[in-house]
Image 1 (cartoon, rainbow, N blue to C red):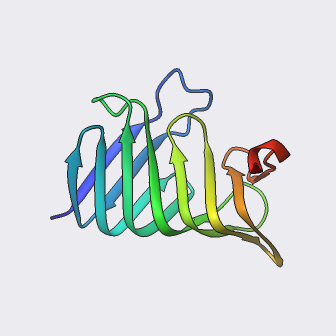
Image 2: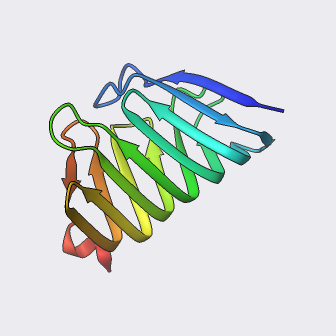
Image 3: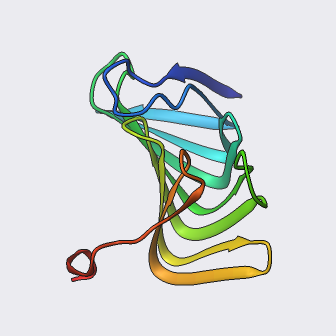
Length: 139
């Protein structure tokens, strides 16, 4: 069974990321979460996130607000300027509230011949660049 969801960023979000497409081979729902398994793909304009398992956390039943966590994932982004960006992490978190990708656990981002690694990295889709975590966030 193929699951395909098409949702739009809420009008009141701080940034309009556009429509999100989420696909997987199978899914099951529990409480306020969808669990997706097998060939998971999240697409948003010039962003593609892939993994074998993902969880969609919903804050309401209409999916107006949600976040997607992809386990052992990889992503590819083509910013409007500059080289494409590739990333991977144990967990990749994408939220409908803003256009930011959080890479958690063995995080890695590459653009051109530059590679950055760390336990936590944050990437802005709007700016097409890494957003530094404040020092207190690492505690």
